Amino acid sequence: DDPMCCMTWSELHARACNARYNTGGIGWELYAAAHQGLVIGEWSLAVNHDERLLLSNADTRRELSQLYQEQLHAFRSTPGFYGAFFWTLRMGSGWDPRPTDTFPRGRQVDGSSAERSLENYPFAVW
Image 1 (cartoon, rainbow, N blue to C red):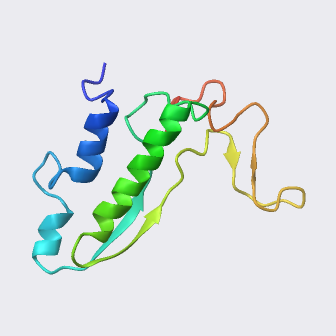
Image 2 (tube, rainbow, N blue to C red; image 1 turned 45 degrees about the vertical axis):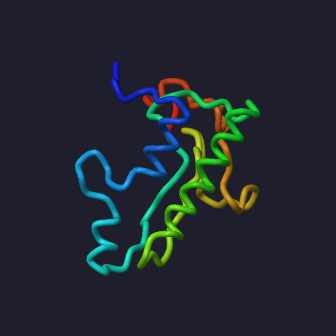
């Protein structure tokens, strides 16, 4: 069992959006204090390790929406911050991004969804 899994929503909000530094003592504020420009290369709402998040649950959607807004605020309020790239909450193990004539923007493979991975996929949530 992972001792970090799984945090309460309030702890998750505090760690992801309000902590000045990560657990190793190095966070982006260290770079901002040195007047180094900052771009967050990738961030997402894929949170809480392998905790299963049901997007059909209204409370989960509300918490994730709040977390999204908190993260944007943390980025925007950081001196020297220039931008970020948001990665999706979850693509599911069956997402095929390759364009075809039938699915020019990719497709979700039959038998999978954003809430259900393909059988034998090693990560239930990612």
